[in-house]
Image 1 (tube, helix red, strand yellow):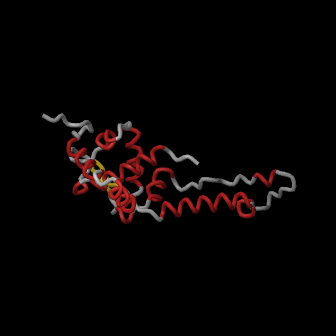
Image 2: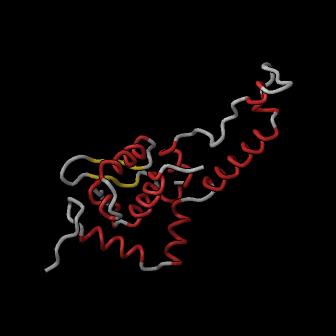
Image 3: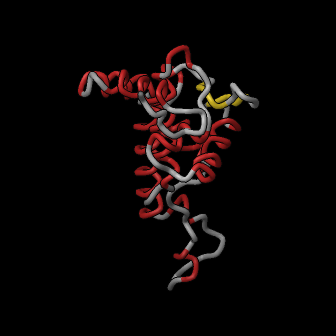
Length: 169
C-alpha cells in the first residue's frame, strides 16, 4: 500500500501549525515554502483538511490556515482519511466466485481467508493511526529534537507573506 504524498505533507503541515505562536494563520505560500512544496498542490491538501474540519481558513490579507482542532483531539487517522478518503486498502473482488467451484451467491469478502486477513491488517493499521494524536507526535518530536518547535516558529516569523524568507539586514 502506498499513500498519496499529500498525506505526508498534510501531517507535517498540521504539526508545524501546532507550533505557530497564537495559532496565527499561515498562507499556503508560507506553508509550501517551508518544505519547498508546490503551493497549488499543497493547497488541495489544505482544502481537504478544511473540508474535514481539521483546519480553518480565513481569506484576506491576514488570512491563511490554522488548526481548527486541538492536537490532543486530532488523530493521525483523521488526517490520513481527510486526504485519502475512507476506502480500505484491500478490496475483495470476489475472485473465488469465478474460479473452479466458485459460487456467485457466496459473499467471498466474508468467507475468503485471504480477504479476512487483509481486512484485519487494514484494521490494525487504522487502529494504530487512530490511537496516535498530533499531540503524541508533537511530544515525541519535542523530546527527540527539542529545538524543532522554536526553529519552526522562527522560520514562520521570518518568512514573508508570499512564503519566501525575508532578507535580514
